[in-house]
Image 1 (cartoon, one colour):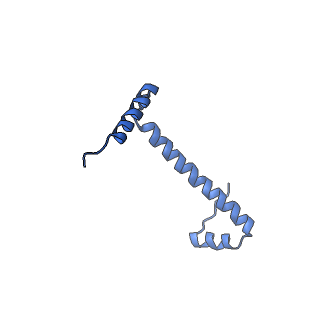
Image 2 (tube, rainbow, N blue to C red):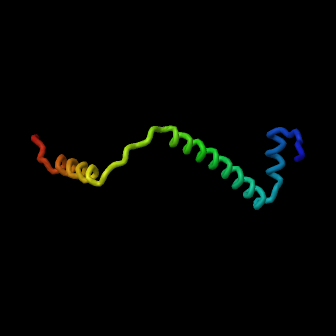
Image 3 (cartoon, rainbow, N blue to C red):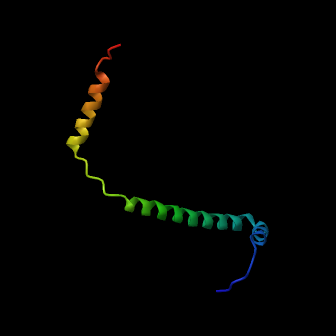
Length: 77
């Protein structure tokens, strides 16, 4: 692998000289790098959280009934 010292300004100037299709390829590569980084952070955050207890169908139905009950009870205004 060859390493060349280059400043950010030199890199930007070089990129501006590329054809639009080549710049698009570079942009896609940069986006993929960022997406991988974001996905990695998200997965690490997800796996660092404590596990959530499984919710049963009965618990879901009970919650639905409770919300409906609260919604349909007339207000005392």
